Length: 597
Image (cartoon, rainbow, N blue to C red; front, side):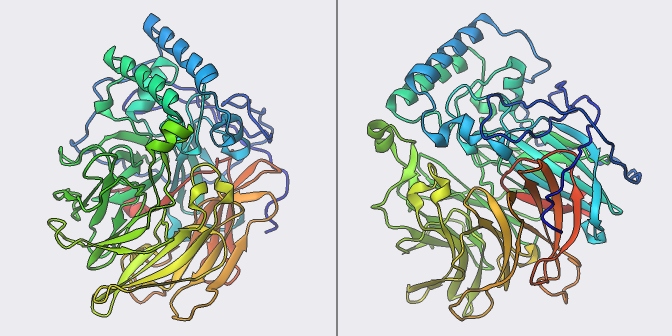
């Protein structure tokens, strides 16, 4: 394939009613992408349809059973759009004053005209719509759904907006018998439903709304008044569920680390439904990481939460049935840190206390974000037994200059007396929040000798790599192959590389590569094994999948690549009926697991 530089004609599906726990009615005619450097409105005009894509009829499947009963449902459910109350109009007026005169979006990193330009611009919801396989054929092992999460603001931001601030939208491609169906739906969080009912944002954006003491004070006061007058109840959640997905305990969850998980279901037609916010029978409090680790052998899920008040880190896990086990508070973390991801081995859980954390002084005196880098802090790695009852065996190891946002994997060596961790190290950590295009992430292999405390490390590739994945069966176990996204620069992803990290030599480990072509950018890759139940199958016997967008033509595609081949040869390409914006993390769920939902 030649990076799909040809012009395309999209299919426009009919409008449908949105089915969700909030019973919200919404227009679902999808807008197509009009390339431009900046946008002046979140919604982009739809081009009239010029052709129709046809595909074979999918076999209808039985409806899943009713959802579980442990949902923490919102006390206020958005039934329909209503005219705003006088108080809401007044609050919105004050919000406009703050955004225009007190804290306007001056910096590019929080200017929505810049942040939401090109294929970062949001799209409307899309009901299940047939897709056209334009190259090759979809392998039988892909029967199921690839779902990718990402930010997609419901309303045009009236003030500062950061890339991390958008409402979560799931882009699902359902595959059955060689046919594909695309569906894009918002995660119906409490925040999304309330703001849809009111017709405007209610709470300020977390990553961009509190830059400087004056902005934080005014927006904080306005939010407090909205809460006191009953417009919003934070007890029901403030999160966006815009980061990732996880499947454990026979349930599928949309995740964002500022809130509880939201349970998701895919219907037999390929539609995506939000079932509700889940607190696991009242045992999960406040929030959970968007990067739980699933042990493929035991079915257990390991997770944590972090926050601005002690304990700054709390570790916990779920058994194979999805039952949450007791919290393990980690008080040896003495200051708040940005703990986005972690790793597990057969014996341990591993956390990275990095230089990014709460930075109130820069917010007060420098007008910066409350989350920022502290160059004086020495990063460290914390190791705790996987099934710890308390933090008594938690150990910390200083690792200067090692700043981890995403972990790839970890495993035990020397009968559990050593740990090896793979992770991209953010070299220019001070740019992580404000200037992502200046960030360079170097994948490193770090080894910790638990007997001597000696830490050794070396890079496995010199390229700018992040969003790295592996065969899910090898999570927590020694793996050989890694598939990583190539930043060009971040957050745009220009291709995928395959790394062979199995040898002990300190050299460039790239053994495979697929660049998407000029003006073509993708997302996080995901590995799907051909024979997941075959213990004799090669680790790299499978496919790498990703959404890819051509900024010249406005066309998006779903690519399936041969994970074994040195060029990551394209096995199948699916033309999507409309563009899929750039996003964050995805997950492939097999048909057998979808039936369990």
